[in-house]
Image (cartoon, rainbow, N blue to C red; front, top):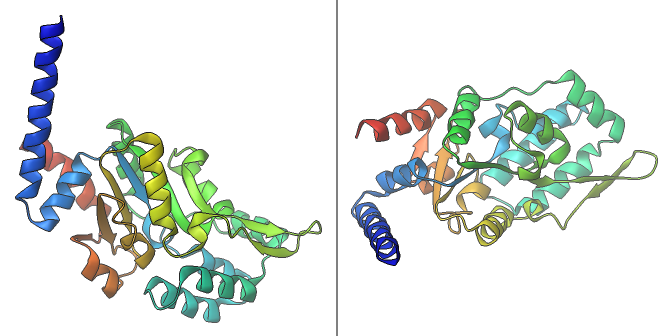
Amino acid sequence: MALYSLKSNLQYATLKTLSLVSISVMSPQQTVQELFRTADCVCFDVDSTVIQDEGIDELAKFCGKGDEVKRLTAEAMGGNMTFQEALKKRLDIIRPNVGQIREFIEKFPVRLTPGITELVKELHERGVIVYLVSGGFRSLIEPVAERLNIPTINIFANRLKFYFNGEYAGFDENEPTSRSGGKGLVVRRLKELHGYQRLVIVGDGATDAEASPPADGFIGFGGNVVRDEVKKKAAWYVTDFQELIDSFTIQTKS
């Protein structure tokens, strides 16, 4: 029995070494593609990635503060200011109360990006753990997670704070996703806590790109909006989730 166990361990170590060698001779894009095909964890951004809209922009529009907030969102996602600075400025403009948040969720149902439902289902079937890691608001993201059958404990996002009368009182600055570098901190904690070996992050913004490393790979997504700075930083950039789904088929055929 001990001899069999030793043989099995040696075979596993050999296969793992061959896998690492194969990745080392690939192009940067091929390396990320291989990481995604063999990932044990995938973290998705939400706004303009999993969903078609920027949640904070739509909330601002609903509250009559759309134009100014949209401009700040563009600056933040392009990496022209720290995320926490942009978040505070935008929320100080909107100042949403509890009633507005509830009404917004009721009147504006989630618009999932085409292909994301099928992609998340495929990942789940392959045993891949999926997280939603967002600089948006947890209250707006929970309906997204429900649609995709992602547990709410797998959401990392910002929390709004309210006074006892329901008026806006700020946001929880202790949440890592409330500041620049926060997504990277979430990724690092996930790897330390769960031991993920091949964690890939997918998103459209600068905060997603900067999370790799510690993420093992970053896939830039431009299906809803293309950000040139992000495109330059992504070894693999896609505009349709079908390309990610197809990558599993390519693996099966090889």
